[in-house]
Amino acid sequence: MLSRIKNNLRSFSFRVGLIFFIALCTTLIVLRVQAYYQSLSTSYEDIRELINAHASDIDQEIEKYGAAGAKYLVHAIIEDTQDKHLYLSFRDGKSLTGNLETWPADVDPKATWQEIYIPEGNNKSVHLLVKITPYKHKTYTLLIGYDLQRVDLLRDTLLRVAISNVLLSLFMSFVISVMVVWLINLYLQRINRAAERVMHGQLQYRVPVSGANDQFDKLSANINGMLDWIAALLGTVKDSTNALAHDMRTPLSRHRLELRALTDDPDLPKKTREKIRDAVKRVDGIVEMFDDILSIAKAESRSGTELFAPFDVTETVEDVIEFYASLLEKRSLQLTSEIPTQPVRLTGDKQLVTQAVVNLLDNAVKYTPEDGKINVSLRQEGDRIIIAIADNGPGIPAQFLDKAKERFFRVDESRNTPGTGLGLSLVNAVAGLHHGTLLLEDNHPGLRAILTVSGEVVAS
Image (cartoon, rainbow, N blue to C red; front, top):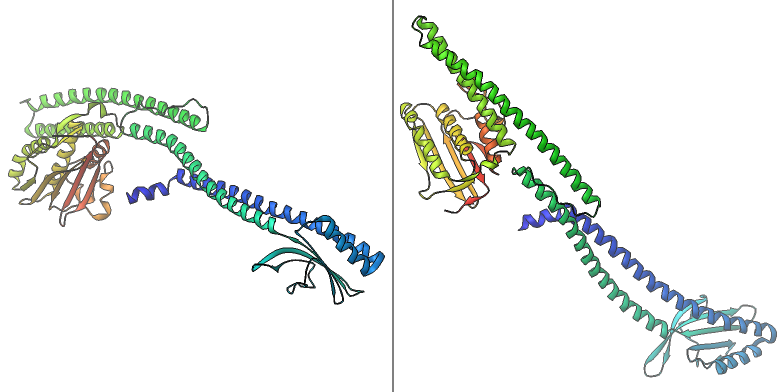
């Protein structure tokens, strides 16, 4: 479960969804914050314009009539406007005119615009935006303030709305991002499903096209075109291989029969007949190598899945062991087996799986010294069937364990032993055809070959 979560976090669709979520959230939050500050800025600007208008009128009155005219106009403004939110105070020396009983103590005379709090009854205070206008050539100071109660109320309201909008934006961004990720995964799953089925041998499967004619449809169409091209190439290779196999086997078989006939000719010297028998063996080796190459190509191209059918793997392994019983006895090799009594059934290519087991056991018999030991085990773990064959022969050096599965590769020490270097390559190809693996390990001493096949395991 944890690994699946990690894979999802590293996926392309998750990264796209995360980027989309961050971009959408950032955009929505910036818009909400901008609207919040824009509304407050507009409210403050309206109040400043109102204060500036009264300040301009009083300035003109002072220029014309001095302090007496300013006091008269202050009283007139307070009485005419009847705006309870407007506060005026004109200080002339020690006298104070306006609707403020005392000059606010926390007013900064050097600051033109400032926000202050003045006490009011019932232990309350009024929040004001004030403008201080000192007249340097005289001892006058004008204070015009306006109650910010509505602005504070607007600020609280906008803050609540902004927080709720941000939460809503986060939620909507998450929902939209999930939908984007889901849509991307939906398209990618179609492509991955097609790739997996083609890899498993269903060469006729194609990526569904929705008909929207978008980029994903164009990608699906291109992949389908590529699969059509690959299928055509494989068909050509398959036809050419079949024709080549037929054309080569026929003359080789005829040549073998002619050589066999010569071995029965009494007129030929004995040494000549022995050389001819050696030639027959070499022809048989060429035919065997050619058959192995065809089997490997068949498995690697996934074209053998049409021959898949349920069969008993337990019976297959037991038949292979029985086939090698006489050779094991002849070479004094001790074979132990760990095979379950109940059938282990698999849907696969019985012939190829049998050939893979034969190749593994043949290698063990070939490279295990006399009086050596070989162990064959078979077990089932969930949807995997594991066949392991271990010996105590010379084994394969650690640096060559992976290369040993390549075609025609042979360790230098085994060059003088019979073989083509295709046995483990065939086993590896059969494992891939059956969604499995071939693992080669050091048996200390010897080699341990673990063939794993999986896929559709048939219930017993």
